[in-house]
Image (cartoon, rainbow, N blue to C red; front, side):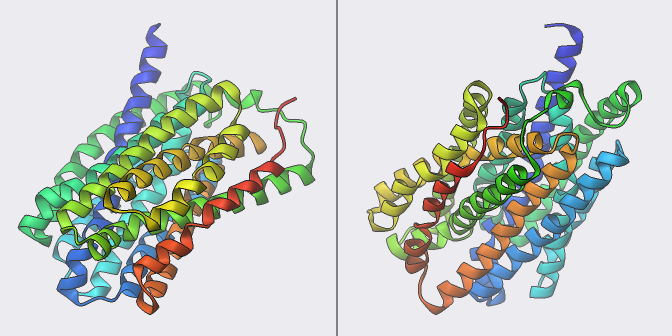
Length: 392
């Protein structure tokens, strides 16, 4: 491996680390739901509104950030975004009312809106041509961060209270240091090659007509709806489900959520590798529809099998994300930031809407009914049949 390749690999790993820290901070929010629900006397609908606020702030801004950065790259935008996250964490540690919680999670959402499209673009520049695997490495960092978050909350915040969230703010300073190094490399690439395109973007020449591209984007929207609505339910309410149905403690339920999130990281790596070798379409087809048997069985199992099935559905379904993202960038080459921002933003937005909707439904019925209803969502994965082959 030459010096240039080593530098790109180091940047890719640092991008993944920055994503890990950012998404760990994001995962603190749903992990403290049981605590703030009791402390502030919130309803399930208000819990859903917190998720909605956090994810809407990022989902609305991400495509705009990506579109702007494709045309006017700002090498140190990542650092500015992390400053918003740092401010949000400090505010969350002392928030004593529902409006203050909403404001703090909105700040964290703004930070995320900058990190995802910018980091995704940098990961592509450092990919060496293995775009699917590079996206998987980048996204695995986020999944590992989301998995660590609940455990960190269980070990730090649950015993010591909401004020201990400020310890995560210290890690945000570490994230600032990591992102500063990434931004220096990114600035050098812009000076060498101009804007943010790499030679790999020039290879994205497809034979699809405008109509085929529109159909493909609509199908991807249906698939994202299926995946993100189901995942939003698991991430926001799995802890409540395990507590209500099986009588687990708050700490034990956090470890179940941790196992689910770790499985999604493993699935991402598998999906990236398989997609680079055999094609994105087949990964997308298998991952979402292939998770439906596990999802349909999960609401009717005992505690052990519920955990096993949650791990399986997380691993299989998550393998689609890097394939969907790279497939989308190959549909519209030269717009990596905008496509990345749109897809990450769409994922967060759908997740926020799903969380609020399922919280409202849980207030009317029960958490167990919500899990039974959402189990049918992965069946929409059959829509992948209509995705065209991008390359001849």
